[in-house]
Image 1 (cartoon, helix red, strand yellow):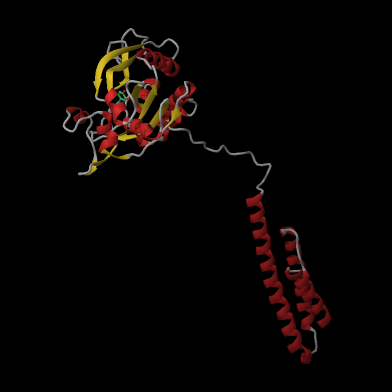
Image 2 (cartoon, helix red, strand yellow):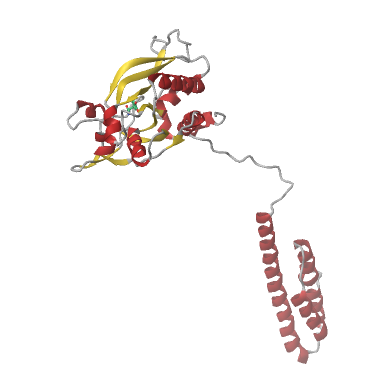
Length: 341
Ligand code: DAH
């Protein structure tokens, strides 16, 4: 009997099941009601009293060891199967749809505008959001006490010398002229900041795109043609533009650009307030004072500049009525642009 116990102990130690079913069979064979252990227990009843002590101990050892080892093997098998399903998974399972994100409408429209101008040979230029007075105002022909500075409510960070959040991307014009000689042809997207109350049509943080073209012999007609091309690319082939005289310190002459309303085709509707036209940007011929301030000879070079609000273009393009939607990141709003360009 002692030999049988030792043989079973050896089997318990050496047993290496490949699957849970095999382990369960083994457990039943050893520890089950009609298993080897119980059979030995039966035999134990009839062994000679002087052998009972030692055999009893050995039987207990077999029982404990078998129970322990089966539990350990069960855990091992379970861990292995978890690992496997984590690494390769069940390849026959139907796939679950991954939820894809989408580009923010402001990024979509910005990319599209940049792409249209890059076809005309413009490259992207950048500049800092925290600026000084020179790059945002002085170099752009805003004299110190000029009332035009009040056109844009500025967030100041420091006074004397003035450090501020840029109120427009026109500051990138100055940055570009500092590091590059004509010919210059840049498109400058960026965030701008103004101390304005937040409403359906205004925000204190928004996005602008600035354009600047300086070379010998650049004319107002060149500007008109470029902006007409831009308008048709963004709002559709049948779009018309018109220019209204305006004022900006950094351009002379200056104009506001309107596009024909893409909702009513110019007949007049609620969006265009019955006029048939939508204002989309400011533009003009770069003021000679701006060229001089940036060491470019206005006798030799001329140029044009333009600036537009990305939120506004996106509102007009997609019929968004409240600008605050762009900042709330409500996925129900954002997912409407999944399919957009
Ligand atoms: N910087 C102007 C603004 O924020 C927009 C602008 C108007 C930019 C005319 C220009 C321009 O470059 O020529 O209101």
